[in-house]
Amino acid sequence: MLALLVAVSALLAADFAIQLSEKVLASAERKYGTAARQRLVAWTRLIAENKKKGEAEKLKLANDFFNEVPFATDIGHWDMPDYWATPTEMLASNGGDCEDYAIGKYFTLLALGVSVDRLRITYVKARNLPPADQAHMVLTYYAKPDAIPLVLDNLVTEIKPGSQRPDLLPVYSFNGDGLWLAKERGSGRVDGGASRINLWTQLNARLGKEFE
Image 1 (cartoon, rainbow, N blue to C red):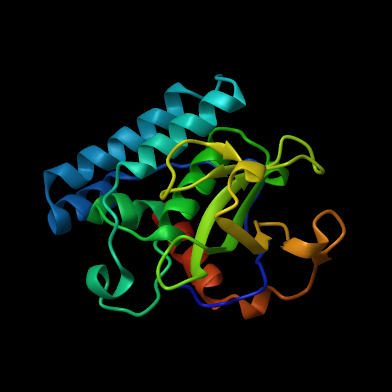
Image 2 (spheres, rainbow, N blue to C red):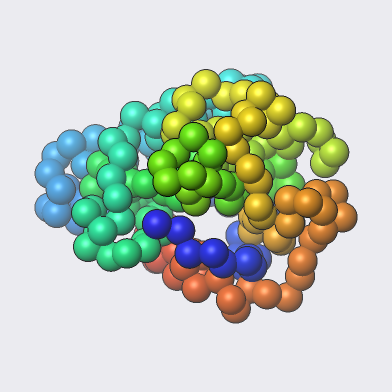
């Protein structure tokens, strides 16, 4: 499900925006049907109409929107053992796994104006999933650098502080700016390893083509 990759790429600008061309929408419709276009239009509308909302409401909007997408394994949905879908791919195909939920929420919140400094895609071990300590991914939000993060998850859909999620054991987290080891949160930033995250790099490359 999740390759244990421990680096990040700094491919995102602070003014990240989502603009899907008619070409992208038409391609999604041809491949997945009219509902695919409708889901993508709903996503861009959610972003366009809610940029002035408070951050708590933005978190809920992004979390609820992507949690509506049905869960699907990579092998069953993409015929690949591990694939990190762009939000466009996830919404058009109407399926994704834990990485895809976290990634979709991450890019949506960036487009809504939430600072990249407050967002981290977080690799955890889910203690309540069989087998024990199964690899899982969530999005975490830090109101302040040293704050207890809020967890946006597809398993427990209510947004809760990390202190109320004893079922999750953090391992590392990353965003477009860096990587942090969980045990060194606040001082454990790791730099210079962007080339090692193949899936993240590939995702960003596809994302860039979608928004051209």
